Amino acid sequence: MNKFTISEEDFSSFKNLIYRESGICFNVINKVILESRIEISMKENDIENIKDFYVFISEDKSNLYSFLDKITTNLTKFFRAESHFQVLKDVFLPKLLKDKSNFKIKIWSAGCSTGEEPYSIAITCLETFGMTEKNFHIFASDISLKSLIQAREGRYSKEKMDNVPASYLSKYFDKTSDGSYLVKSFLKKLITFDFHNLMHTGTQNGMDIIFCKNVLIYFDSISQKLTVNRFYDILNDGGYLFMGHTESLFGMDTKFNFNNINGAIVYSKN
Image (tube, rainbow, N blue to C red):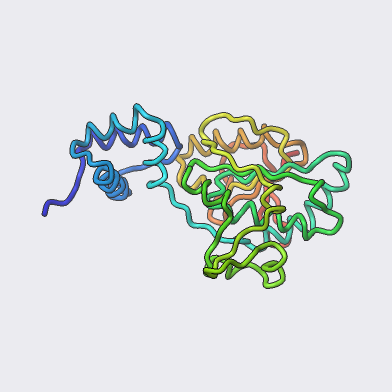
C-alpha cells in the first residue's frame, strides 16, 4: 500500500490557506501531520483527488472549519498552570475589584478549546473574596466549532476532573448517571462562548484580563507579533495578559511589561 503524500505545489496551497484562515503555520518538519489530516478528511468526505478536496474546503466555510477542527490541537485541562490562577485570585482580581467597583471585570479566554480554562477562570472569580456573579463576565473563543460545542455543553469525563479540587466538584458540577460531570447552569451563564479567529479582528474590546495560553506556539513570528499587539490594544490600561509557560514575549517588539509575581509570568499594560 502506497503511503499518502502530496506534492510540493499542493502542500504550498494547503499551507497558505491554513495560515491565512487560522494563523497556524506548517512547514517541511510538520508536513507529515498535515498530510495525515488531509488523508483522513478526504476519506471521510469520499474525495479521491487532492485538488478536488482543496476546492471542497476553500469554497465552503463550513467544510473549511470542519477541516481546521482536525488540524488544531485541543489539549487542555482544568486549572492548568496553577500559579496563574493563584495570582489571579490573590492579586489581580482584588485589585480590579477595587479599581472597577462600578463596572464589570471583563475577561477573555482566547483559544478556549473545550472550555476547561474559562470554567476554571469563572470558579476562581467566584472563589475570590468579595467577588460575585455581578462583578465579572468571561468571553471564551476558539477556532474549533467542535470544541466550542463541547465547551457550551460543559460535560467532562471523570478523568478530566483530576485537577479540580474536591471542594469544587459538588459546588460547581453535577455528577451524572454515567459518571461524567456537568457544569452547573449558573456557572455557564457567566461565560459567552463564540467562534473567533485570532488572525482576524473581532468585537472584543475593553478587556481587563486576557488568557491566551499554548496558542501562539502554532503561529509564526509575524502572526505572533500581530496577535500580541492586538491584545495590547484590546486591553484596558492596567490590564493583564496570561500566556503559556512555553511561550514568551522576550525579543518581541511589544509595549507589554514583564512581571514575575509569585512564580507566575504575567504581562501588563502600562
